[in-house]
Image 1: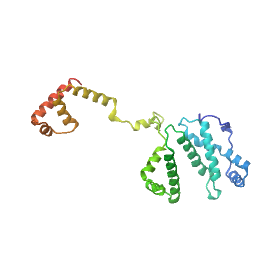
Image 2: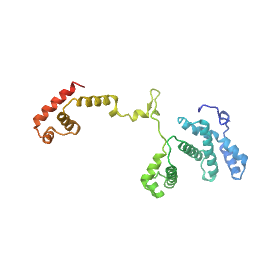
Image 3: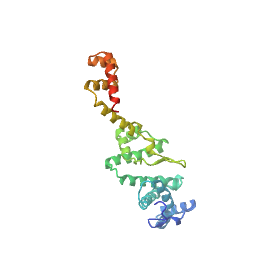
Image 4: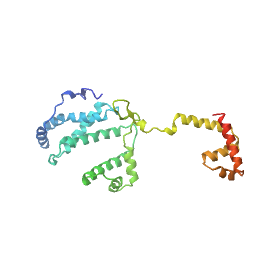
Amino acid sequence: MMNKVEICGVNTSKLPTLTKAEKIELFEKIKKGDAQARERFVHGNLRLVLSVIQRFNNRGENVDDLFQVGCIGLIKAIDNFDLSQNVQFSTYAVPMIIGEIRRYLRDNNAIRVSRSLKDIAYKALYVKEKLTNKNSKEPTISEIAKELDLPKEDVVFALDAIADPVSLFEPVYHDGGEAIFVMDQVKDDKNSDENWLESIALNEAMKRLGEREKHILNLRFYQGRTQMEVAEEIGISQAQVSRLEKSALKHMRKFI
């Protein structure tokens, strides 16, 4: 999809580029209300939108939709850009375009999040950006919560709710050979097929024992009691516990 030449009726192979001088000239005209200059400025920065949507090519979203949403972010960046700040337009516009696309993806996510949670999350992101610019460092969750006058837990929950889900099959590393996926890093060795089969076999073998033998093995191997502690609990000698334990284990081995 991302290799399409024509997106939303726009031939991306023929998109123009603007020089720094042209951007400044057009922007000054835009501030005076020149509609043609605005249209030319938008058209001259569509390559910026195209480059940004490449980052979202693994989401399965329609590329035309992403391009249109990115254009909205571009227009918002044009409306809010301040030429006097001595910052390149692309530096300012890229986060705006990314933010617009992320909002679109969150609102159209298969995992539905309540409007109140989204509002808290968006306010938290705004406060985070504001405090980062003010203090030249990223704020903590506690600082964001204090600024919003909300419990820290509410802010954490809201931000987690709008986080983009990650596919288990998303590659995290590739050296030209076999890729490493997210699922390789979260593999649960405790719940492998071998362990499940072993657990089933032990449970079936335990069913073959008498009630006292089951009780002794449960105390010894599931609750971690010593033979002396087991002996005191059921009222027999430690030597009897040892004999019963060995006999029970020998009996179980026949069925495993």
